[in-house]
Image (tube, rainbow, N blue to C red; front, side):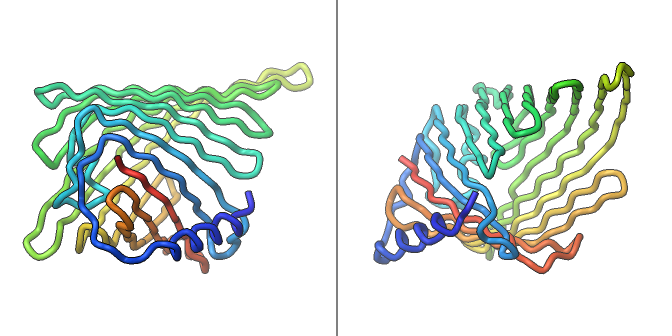
Length: 271
């Protein structure tokens, strides 16, 4: 997917707005469109679109803009579409939160590309320990089908998220994800049957320090078997009008070391 035209469109749209004071009104609808690409190859990246509805209004008066939905602890339903080249992914998901702060959720994901059709089904359940912390378990089943082979995936995850308010900044958001994955592969070629089984464990750690409601600096660490990924980033949300914002993020991979930067740009409408 060539991204030069969308990036130019972003720049032109932003230049059409003048700076003005905005109100941080609560919202129940969120629409978004975005693009992401590496500076090593800005013409090759992906485009995305999403929508989410919150059953109770989400307050964003005093909390970081990008954490308002997490801190609201509201039941919600939404969808996301992503595409680049011959690859596309569509997700529908939702979560129900009861009055005692227990919650259940689920998602259906479909991936279409030139090689195969993949489908994933996720269920989750957990609890909000307090107004800023959640812990939950998640199970995902996936199926990858080719013309003469099939791959089944079973992932079991434990996730914890918390936001720690601080006196001189907005606060720090931490999240951790532990995952155990199992896969089985079956294939038939030239009259012979092949059957393989594999399992792996992984950990994902995220930390974001919010200096203001709009600006944050973060770090990401991922490890699976003998593979490590580490990156740092900074993000900023520009409140253009009462309902319209622009979210941008610049990410740098430290491990493995890469010369380029990953740049995300998203237009967000909250009503």
